[in-house]
Amino acid sequence: MGDVFVWQIFYEAVILPFVFQRARDKAKIAAAVTEQMPNVMAYLEKIAPADGFIFGELSIADLAIAFPFSNLKWARVEPDVSRWPRACAWVERTLATTAPAKLTRIADKLVQTAPDRHRVALVDLGVQLTDATIAGDKPRSSIMLDRV
Image (cartoon, rainbow, N blue to C red; front, top):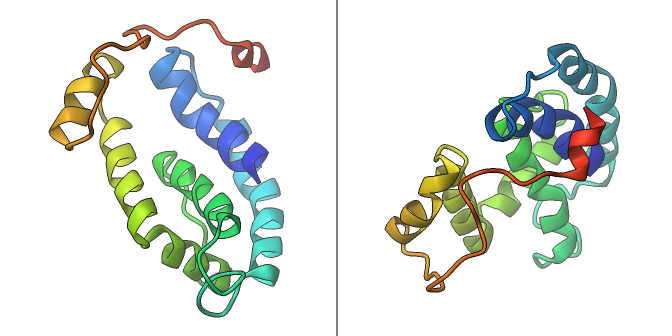
């Protein structure tokens, strides 16, 4: 799931163009969405609980499934709710719980904010920060760039 949602879709659609100023490969993204994402979603549809969470109470299992869907949203890819209703409802329930909702609100803001403005945006959102950071305003070299 992570390989498809994060690396083949989100990385190609969002990280490459906005962080590394490299062209996105629209054909590669489309292939992942049409050929690989349906297999992931079909599996999730089989295991998704009709209500509540996978082990009754919210657990790391639910969170591990739900968070990569934020990457899809930021890549402007939405799973077909009519095709995978149980999986989509499960993810929605999970992301609506307190901690994920708070993190999603912060991440939604940061994904729309230039990296050199992240600290200001985080302060505006009420996030407590350290006095210093090792983050910079320019992306560092990454072994993931070898994937392109």
